[in-house]
Length: 319
Ligand code: ADP
Ligand code: MG
Image: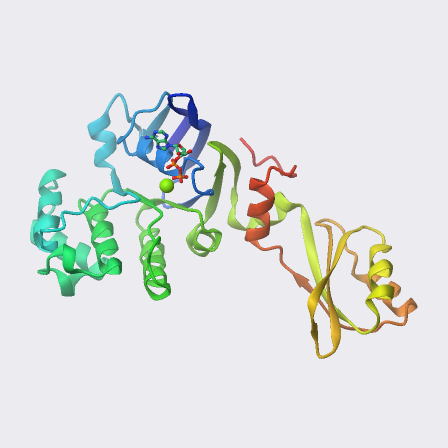
């Protein structure tokens, strides 16, 4: 549905996007994740035709953005980082303006009513935009992107500045979109992306560093798994004994104690099972294990590993 190929963008000497390629399939919600300054907005502005690339191609549903900018743009709804709202207009006036600008042919009042219903702004339809709360204004921006019912929706950091309740509402809206639209959603917040996306593309310093499903990214990119343990006994005995277990790569004691027991995190390669080894070692050291469970590597951990430039092992996900 969306194909980005070898995209490069230079601002003078600054290489903001460095040979980025990825595709988004129909109906997919793709997370575009990266720290501030990674090149997310630049890439999105190129995909939506607001900015020209230095080189590379973007194809939207078969339309190349440079060969057929009108065709490509008509297939995209875009909510930029700073929504292009006319503060002095009412929501109604503004959405009608967008409707005319996009030369939409769907029945006007019905279509706009539907868009307002989906984005939950019906109750402020006749209010002036500048008097609305940030959450409502963001949803008006969202509504603007949906006008004309484009098959591809691109959202640049849509939850920045919203409060937790508004974030949840926004997430639900995005999830709902995924049923009928192809969505690209950018964020520098991992949990944001994890909550709604099927697949994640990670960009850092203008370069693509990961392209995996949300589940895959955790294990594949860290290559490690974790076990959480509560153990009775002295850490001077427990730590060396855990570290001596075959295939254990890292052991760390958590500062807090649980019911008087020490908490430990053991890391091993994803394909190794160190649980029996741990059990035997602790039995031998006379340090009873009172709790043992798999603790998922969080996506936050994976993300930090990826963007810190530590070598990561992938199953061929890198393109
Ligand atoms: P993100 O959206 O991931 O935070 P951006 O795409 O906004 O990142 O920016 C990527 C890099 O390009 C940053 O280093 C930023 O400072 C730089 N940049 C963005 N816009 C311009 C511009 N108009 N002129 C020069 N440098 C820019
Ligand atoms: Mg940005």
